[in-house]
Image (cartoon, rainbow, N blue to C red; front, top):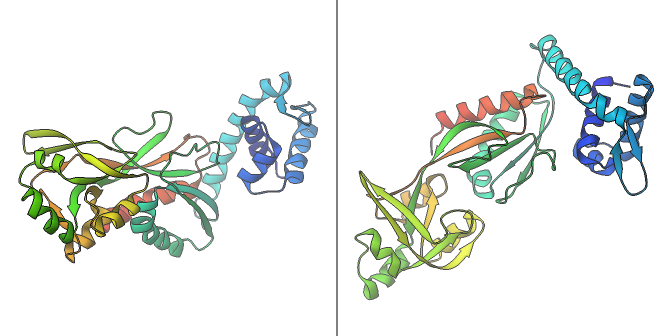
Length: 299
């Protein structure tokens, strides 16, 4: 059996403490996980794991061997990458991204990458909640943040700008009651849509050297940005949304840019991964591709 794969299986079981969870994470059957662990134990002539019907735990020998096996695997991965430097990329990459970014921007970039590398398979989880990369065996997360998780390795690959928008129907209706929106303080009188994961009730705006923090009345709050977009298109109220999601609707007149001189704070779009150790050539190539693609295809 492949000793490199066996080492990866053992390291994953040491983290997950579950043969079934490791099988799901590594996309193999539970009996195959068992065979790899047994093969590792035969090669090393030691028992690595205590196995009961209720739990898995490292033996003292397994605990002592874990760091050495991780180091050996890192060296093996580096050697394989060096030997195969001119080989075609192949294998699986597991990713996660927000629904809105995946829907509007990630798919074209991924399609372009897969066209260049036909042997690479990509599995994407789209969710606005923060996934545990290790728990879900995610290779790469695309996240929008001002301060990304410090436990992860991050590389900015694009910039995310946001704007205030509303439908013409909402603005026309509100104007008769509240008048025009001329300054940030006017927002507090209006119905707004709040994004649960970012500035739900206080919107921070800047204009040159002026800064305003406005408490807004979010009668509707949603945890996913494309749903906020559709609520805004349907005239529910004013929302703060990323330009990558709303520029097309502003350009075709279905949304109006509210207070265009006032700017919400920008954030970076990061490619995040859990460790520099064992970062596959596929993931490295995908990160580089996304950075180049978004630079060439600004939204």
